[in-house]
Image (cartoon, rainbow, N blue to C red; front, top):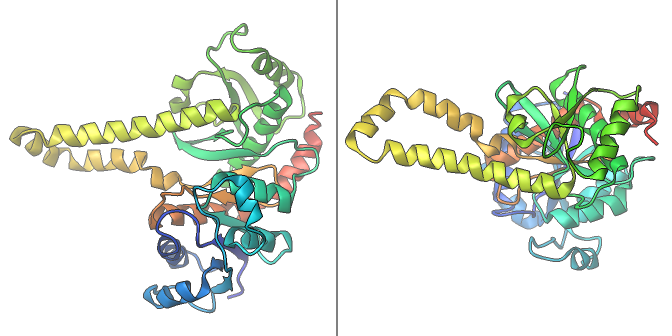
Length: 341
């Protein structure tokens, strides 16, 4: 079968690389056949273990040698100084020249963002990229952005993020109706700083939006699932993300501790095993691994640095959905028609 999509993978980024990367790619090929993966990294090191993975072969993979890699603890400036022979740079550049369709990396977030902006450039009319990710809610899923790419934002940036996020939601979940909201400290018109208030007015007044604008949404309402795209600045978004991750971990840990505290609680656990299993599955952050930098001329997926093979697979699967849904062209077309300037 002719390969339909090609994913560039930085195999040297994040913890336990390239092992977890190869395991994740193997899982992808177990479930998808119309995809090709171009793996960038230490070719000798990678080829030594390729035979350990049943679904990896020369028909669905290519191996592109890169002599250097970007360490996770290096500054962005020093990462750029490493030059164009790192696995991260080469993977991004392969998308620029049209060899691949999308890049996935577990590497240094700051370096990935800056390199992507340098190599791929921004979509015409988009000022800043936003980091967006999937969050579970009571009904299904939401998209939240920005999660840390921009500490400070203008009202125009927030309007842009709303448009970008709505298009991402449509692409991933194959929906045409999307409700968005601005994350704020209250739902009343008088709440929030001037930037949020001005963004709110712009969104209310724009009649060409590719979504339904609900207004303000408070943090405790995200879980309800009524608003599908939640927009905020990178500082607030990152704090919200880390708080949500910590809360989910706290809940699952405490439930586990409670069920193991006595003989009776262990017996109770046996009766509630399947219910607890479903809760744990819903809250498992590995299922939602993979955030996308929106606003660039090509899609870039950031996998969590500590992601295991299953989590990395989910970031690859997200990249498949994005390419399959033709996200970048949809953003370009809708961004022009929205005329948010």
